[in-house]
Amino acid sequence: MGIKKTIRQTNLARRQHFKTSAKFLSFALLFTEVEIAWGAKILGVRVWPSEDYTRITLESDTPLPISQQILTNPDRLVVDVQGLELNPTLRDLVAKVKPNDPYIAQVRVGQFQPGVVRLVFDLKEPIKPQLFTLDPVGEYNYRMVFDLYPTTPPDPLMELVKSSARKESALAKSNEEVDFIAQFATKKEAPKSPVAQAIPEAKEAPAAAKYKRLITIAIDPGHGGEDPGAIGSLGSREKHVVLSIAKRLKDKIESEAYMRPFLTRDGDYFVPLHVRVQKARRVEADLFVSIHADAFIQPHAKGASVFALSQMGASSSMARWMANKENASDLIGGINIKTQDRQVANLLLDMSTTAQIKDSLQVGNSILKQISGFAPLHKGKVEQASFAVLKAPDIPSILVETAFISNPQEEVRLNDDGYQDRIAEAILKGIKDYFSKNPPVARRANS
Image (cartoon, rainbow, N blue to C red; front, side):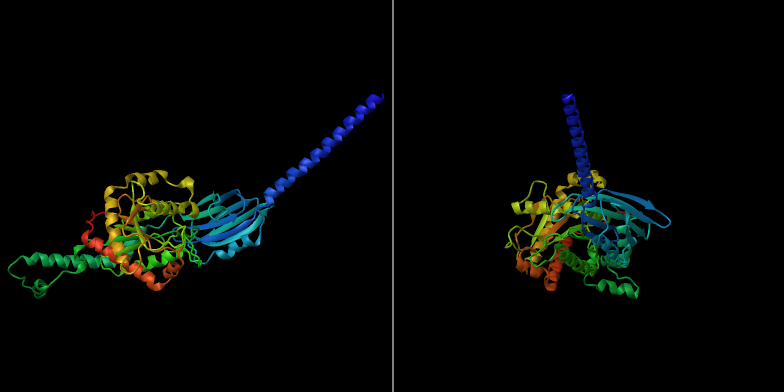
């Protein structure tokens, strides 16, 4: 009897222990779920508007699942972020959307359910959204990225043709006049009309006469948006400095009768490396000039440099280091790997030709010579490395490092209006010198 009682007491104690353990385990699991659902922190919200697309970035300390739906009448994008509670940082998103945003009219943020924050983007026109997440890289934690693309993207070539129509017409008229002069230059008798009689007296054809069409220069300000580029000791960001220099170069090219400029970005937003190349090819550029102001691990590194593509390895250890650093731009700026056209990227890799590199070295040397007239050079010749942004197979492409922003003295110089203007002028003179010796061929009528 005593033995049975003892066994019953023991079994009762075990059951009680199991119940207590189960309760504790349930509480622990519940606590873990609460931590997962409610413990995430939003570290920052950023909005990058542009004509190409508008990007919204939410940065958090842990990865968070997101879902989306597109609604019409009116057009809006609804995004649910799970594992999140509404906080002041998220509410700041409302104020970050500006009235001049091309695609977002306004954004509404609210606690849709416990642990679920809903973002509603009221749209100005239908869009094609791309939502994706990025793992930590550089100074960034986890990022949720919403890229809002227009359903009908702008055509950069048509915009360029419209903006340069008057210049194109003037060049065509100039060429007609030169042809008219040439037509009668070999004849013994001058034409009878008063206007034509004056033509043989022309001493020299206009400078633009050797060009049968406008020369298109694609100017590529490095970095932008989520990718600040190198940062100097005074806080200068490469993306701002190079955009300023690029705009100066653009204005100078605009003043040339036989040239027209095209910027791969004209504001503070991120453009993937392969998209920069695609844009240049889309506008049928005759030259691609990527502008940078990079950093090196040693702050005393100084001087301007010019780089061309290499298929045979880098020309120096620094050139290799520079190329690797620049090629990491996509990781920092953030691209949607799932939608990246790998076939096109591989095509650009494989089709880079010896002729393209030869032309790139020529124009690079012309520019380097002009820069050497007023600024120190890091290397006296064009260096080569496998820069992703220089891999257009049919466009001479160079990358200009205007100075080292990591050098305190050069950082000050890079922020000086005078230096920026002289760098832009030197690049222009180098371009003009190259094309004076290598005028582009006429395109087919349907180009």
